[in-house]
Length: 424
Image 1: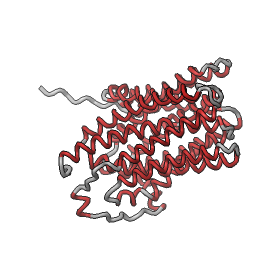
Image 2: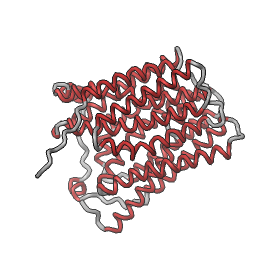
Image 3: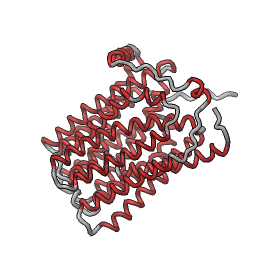
Image 4: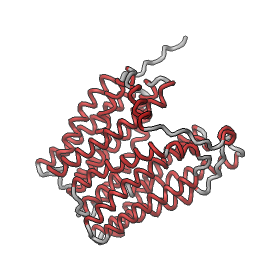
């Protein structure tokens, strides 16, 4: 359905582009995987808790997907909901840091657990609403342009702000520097919330006619039965053999951030270097992997998993030789891992669309998401326990071994796309 006027369409493109860039800056400066994990270590929280926060966030996302997806889909207008979620995430970050400022470690631990759970809950709900808004209000070309603007301008903005905050606060104590970064993140979440309200939300005719009829909610038993039925399909079983090890590959970002925090959380440049590294990784990954993905999804997945494995091996070698005191080593490692994980994530989604039969894509995608999140919660909790009982390097070693296996499974299972015969 075309928008009611070309003026509204152009306005929405500008508004959503601005909102996406502002939100990207906010997420990068307040990244749960990098910034909050770094802060958890710097605040002397137990290493098990710092690692398990990844699991807590995933549990929040699972609950949101299970209970809120259908009510959200039934809403005709979503811009106010998106604005509320942006402000909600900002409030979670700010409250957690204010409680941390008291210096009470048990209260700080509880605050971080609640913040990660709520961020997971809110983030998944926001993702569902944004997907619907982008589908209804933008054309395919506009969506692609906004995606690249988000990664490019948002990444550059986050890098610039992180460096500026570092210069202003470098003479201050570590917590004051970290607090300034999170306050900047909260500010941009608020800017993003205000920006989305300027959108002229037009409800497509087909939705307006059918109204906001709420779909019937599935019971837990029905969801489990649906997943069990998907395993009757040979393509699904084959895909899951390849997909499950990639869950561990995705966990490399927070655990690489943890080992960096363990070594550099007291240094003046520690957090700034991590933010610049991760933002640069996401900035570079989009144009890099787009070219490779057009040729072979298998090449992206194999290359990405090997990049994580090799980076981990190099980092562990320096660690056990006691040569990992330079912040630049961890910054480069996080940069490479961010590039790799982004590429692998995009490629496996595209590969799923290639192998899943059209009439089974929705059920298959839901089953994959549920299984991978459950496995992610279990594995990240185990890795957090390993990091707590031994050291973070032991968890990195486990990730390296799984990445090597994942590269092999991707190479064996993911079949290159066959080129169509040239027409004479």
